[in-house]
Length: 344
Image 1 (cartoon, rainbow, N blue to C red):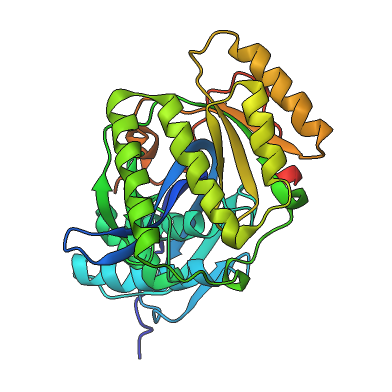
Image 2 (cartoon, rainbow, N blue to C red):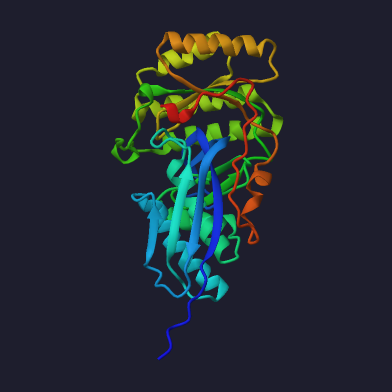
């Protein structure tokens, strides 16, 4: 009896960025008038997750291992992606090995788990010669981790329903340019999102969030960095009803004295940012003063970076079917040498 034919393994790679917390988060109305949790993230080029999936045709789909072990959300995402890609391609589902690498610190609110999940889904899709639409990736990510950040999109500012994996509104083509002085509250200690106390929302909360949504839409349409900062600060202040960072008052005071346009925080983490208009006179002097003031308040700084008016689409283009090499994370345009987030 001749042995069963051996099928060569097929590999694919995928990359996903992280973000720097939220500019706006709350409860909003969707197109049908239904209450829906939503958020707008602050994109950050540079750190991210890269995945390689080595698919072994002929093996059962449950024979799937993840390196490093313990990345259970990425493992679930890979298994879901195998089933989806097998159905789309007409090829049988198969197991394999998923290897994850990256430099996104865990627990700070930078979207580390979503970055892993999206990179895993893209790697599996590439091994099948596919590129899944962002909406499909979002639905798989939500199934894998219950809620996800909009890192599978092209960097446009969107109000995203993180528990449903869908866009509630595209706010415009790009955020106003910002210079962000990143820092970590609570000494940079990781935050367990699931341990946070729940806040019961009411109609007053919805109206307040909708007002901020309208202001943010106007800030994006007019390129108004100062209005964007006001929205982010208001959203961050509302988040303190749950997060209760003891340094929050000091952070906002530093922002005011430094001539910043506002602050933003990760609503499920420790990372925060002081926001500056990069076109403002004397911005470098203001940033240096901000850094000194944060250190004086024992608030560790992490990374100073600028957002870009260009879409992140070009930075995600290596995920096509023909790509088999390692993805290279794009570098942020930093006016100062960045501190490593992983140092926290």
